[in-house]
Length: 193
Image 1 (cartoon, helix red, strand yellow):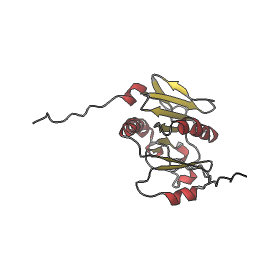
Image 2 (tube, one colour):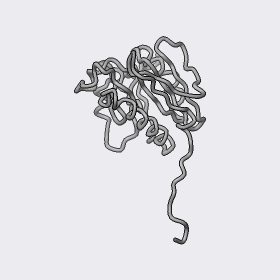
Image 3 (cartoon, one colour):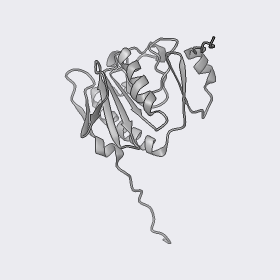
Image 4 (cartoon, one colour):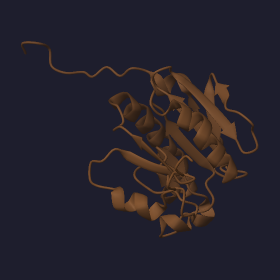
């Protein structure tokens, strides 16, 4: 008889966390460990963070943006994810505990080869189950963007522009996909100067 796998809890994951550890996540009791993000990953993520700050600030929603470590559990004991960036619903923006967050209108994952299946399949299903309004999957290696809206069965490719509204009646946020993946030249002193 095969041994039954031990299902982990959010408390188990919290006790595993140490400084400078790779990302540790839990989906339905299954543990996932990811390496430290690449520089390319972080460039893509930060471009979108800056654009979302400029969009959310005039709406008074800057406190809704989570662009760093933040645990999303939906109050369950078997799910603990740390999306690359996400927006908490404006009605919950001042929630003081991560475990109290229930409504998330936007989640963005910048994927790596090691997380491609997890982010495109497992997490998409998780986010649909928890009624995430819009889920963007950005792939810096393939230079592609995909999205899933609440109720979608699959991810859809986004060729030109990512679009999203913070709430009904809010202005449209739009960001050209090509701008996410452009290479950045760094100016410096001339050699020998």
